[in-house]
Image (tube, rainbow, N blue to C red; front, side):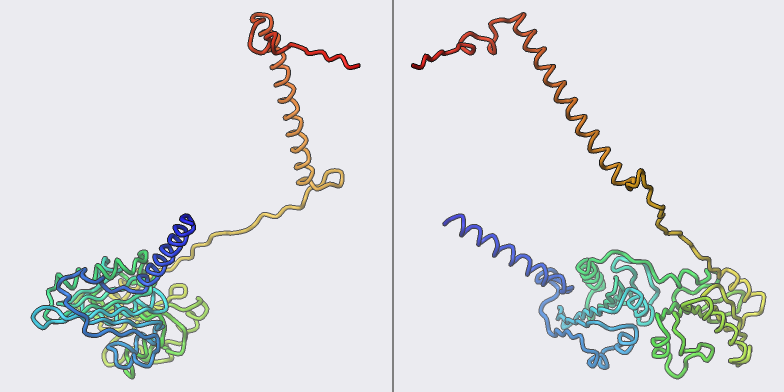
Length: 363
């Protein structure tokens, strides 16, 4: 009876622990009493419906890049201050990185917290996996904001991911990192810029977009990298650029270059020589890895597949080996008994009482 009770208690404890682990996995906010400065929770909300996003700062961007879930908690702090933590789950890591580049208030830095983050004043936002997190304080010490950000990042617990590969194709010469903007699709680009979206970009096409400001030799402008699904689509788009607008608009020169599926459009006060220095570093190369399965004709011997015949032969050899081992063991034991009887006739195996024979006469 005792063993049954102990077993049931063990199952109950395991189930309770599993339930607690599952609960914590979806809760990225600080634990109770983790930070003494966070006095009490004044607001908590969570939803996976897109309709409340209209009231959230940047909510339209969440929807455009691929929204999944939103969670927010507001704490009161000392001296009538407050601290807000927002955790937005998006479609993938590219979506989270895009929102980071579009809603940040300072330059992006490598994490922690997160895979990449931007900190300005008493606010921190970071992207980690498919999560985008924004922490804002009011009357709150900057150190507390950073500590809470690290705690939230630790609770998310996802492995580090690199920035979208398109970012790596931005030229380093004249690059202003603080102006970086990344769009995983044309929809988010159009939503961000609205009616001021550049006429050079054919928004009906599926493409990634990365933009940054450039300054070189007292000349400045904006570079847009467009990454298309295939080189053929990029080539078609590149060929139609000349007819879409004049090469000069409002005193700004426009230069374009294609490298594989990437089309670069540089607009600004650059002269041809300066534009060539920036665009010449944009290259694209393919990495090919051959993956194939070598299939040979099945070999037959005397009409029997070689694989089956090999298995039979190996089995026979194994049986023969066992026979040899058995014979060898028997011969060895016989020799051992002979030698033992010769040099130690009164050994334990050959004692008279062990060899005594009892005869029964039955009538």
